[in-house]
Length: 182
Image (cartoon, rainbow, N blue to C red; front, top):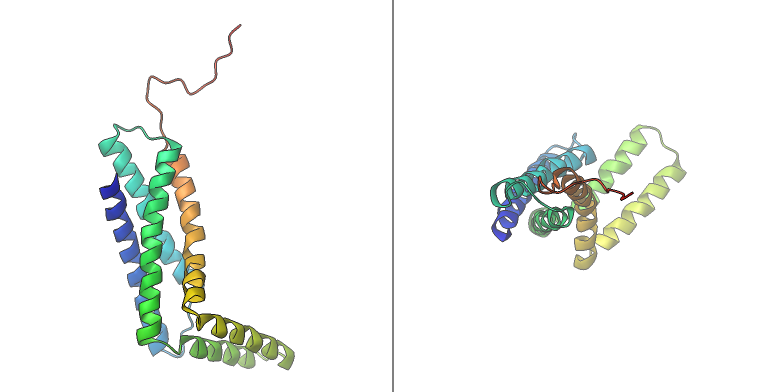
């Protein structure tokens, strides 16, 4: 089970980390393109398909097609944690080594977009205060780690839950219905 968890966790982590670095590089080098939450969460979802594949592979190859919800959920959690940790580490390296002014540039893009759209001065000031708050939080490595985990872990938990529910399977001889004696 450990080998399966490690393999699929590393594959999922490589997928989400590669897409994240590639998209951030594109955003950084093209001022007309804004970071997209849709691209970010879609890449996480693609990576987390490995949770389903890993549990299914282990169930079918090692457990003769039988796995409990608990064991499937535990496997999914470990795969998700490995992938999420790779994502967080990749973001920390990318942020601190290659894009330390990310928050300032991202904030500028948001404020410029609001100005182009004709937002009120109050709306721009409100957004500026939020950007400052996030920039201040990004200055703390602990907060940066927590923020980054909070981006990926919730989706991983949902995928883990659905995968465990879909893939759980009792042995063929075991009756899945409760029988009431008369």
